Every structure is written in C-alpha cells, then in structure tokens.
Length: 324
Image (cartoon, rainbow, N blue to C red; front, side, top):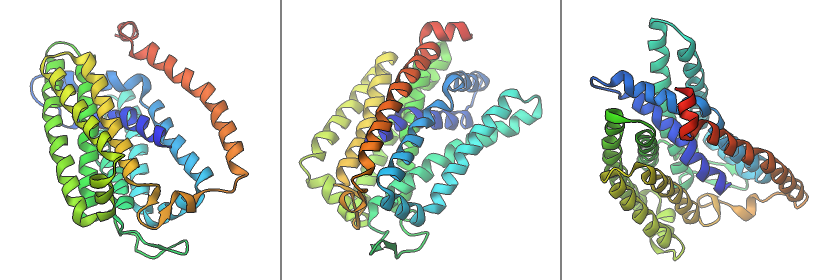
C-alpha cells in the first residue's frame, strides 16, 4: 500500500497538478501552456489512477476494519474527491472532442476539479493523522466533519496541492520546449519555495493539532533520515532547475515527493488512524493474505510491464515526436 501511495503521488499527483497550471495559464503563451498540459496528460491521463485503485482494493481486502472506519468517518471528503476525479476525467474527454465555446466550459471544470481534488485528498491524510477521529470498540464516535475540516487538515491539503503543482511544473518544463519550458521552469522554482514553506508550517501546526504525529516526526530515529533525505532531494532539484538541467530535476522532484509520502507513513507508526486504529487491530483473517498475495503477484506481472510499455511508447522522445 505504501508503494502504491508513493507511485500515485508522483504520477497521478502530477496529473492533478497539471490541471492547476491549466487554470493559471496566463500571458501571451497562455494557449501554448494549456496545449503543453493537454499533450503531457493525453496518452496516460487515466492510467495513473490505477495506483489509487490498487491502494483502495488492498485496503478493502486486507484491512477491511480500517477501510470501514475511514470510509465512515471521512465519507464526505472522500466522496467529494472521487467526484472531482470523475468530473475531471469527463471534462477532459468532452473538452478534447468539443467545439467552440463548449470547450471553454469543460476546460474550467477540468481545471477547478484538478484544484479541489488534491486539497480534499490532503485533508483525508490530515484527518487520519490528527487524532481528532476517535474510535471506541470499532465504532466511530466523532462526527462526519471531525478532523478533515480542522486548520491542520486544511494545511495538509494545501501542502498536497503544492507538491502536486511542483511535480507537474517540473515534468512540464522537462517535456516542453522554448519559452513554454522556461515558463514552467520558473513556476517550478516558485513551487519549491512554496512547498518548503508549507512543509514547515504543517510541521509546526502538527505540534498543537496532531501531537502524536508531531512526536513521531520529531523524535523517531526512523523519520529523521527520511526528512533529511527529502530536504537534500528538494535542494538538489532546485539547483538542477536553476541550472536548467530539467531532465535530472524531474527525477529529483519525484524522489522528493515520494520521500514525503514515505516519511508520513513512518510517522504514523503502524496506525491507520491515530491514535485508535492500529495495523495489528485492522489486520485480516490469516486466510485472506495468501490469496491476496497470489492475486497481487499475478496482477503485477500483467500491470507493471503494461505501464512500462505505455510510458516508453508515449513518454519517450520518439513517442512524443510521433504524436506531434
């Protein structure tokens, strides 16, 4: 599950962030910027969501108690996020095949759904980390708006949006050319600063709003190496962006975001929901795991080569040349 979340963050997250840049396209190259977004997303715009489906299926199958608790306590932001993903996909399709003024409306739906969805996903992460959701004997005792509407969860939502916008701007800079690439490079530099500032604010807010998470982040010997590695990756990505080595910057930015997800997972210290739902308590019957592992193994043999081939065809320089 941790691997699936990390891969979704650096792939699907970048797709969501690209929609934000479509919304914020400005200046004389506005149309070219939006075309760069469309060209980058077009071949693989739905494939990246397979990792989110993977996480949901594994959690439902292997940790059904935790799945039930999270689905009940956070059904409002989860439902809204799923609605955003569906609206985004539908708007992208209708925009691609639309004509005239109707394309403008669908373009706005696509952009706004791309803005709201990462924030909602981030509030879910903030809620399960905060300690505001309480569970007694397997029953959620807090309301449906507990946790995810708190200042801390909203800050995590903003941080998630910043990370996704950072990723997409770096990817777009690496895949674009000329002045458009320079536009996205400058935005990526700005987003590195914004993401770093929001990371610090989120960490400081956790002290009062998510003390369990803060203690694990500040005192655990396992999280500090990840935090240091994340900072190094961020600085290296910034330096590569500054010196216009965009190909390498893309990989460092992906490492940076992936390490953020890993660090958060380690800071949860074996909990699905702090402090009441642990990994041990949510574990399934022993009979489930062999069948699940077998299914995951067989599925991986089919899924991973297909995704690698998809990226090689559409994301290589030769693939982009064939599509242009």
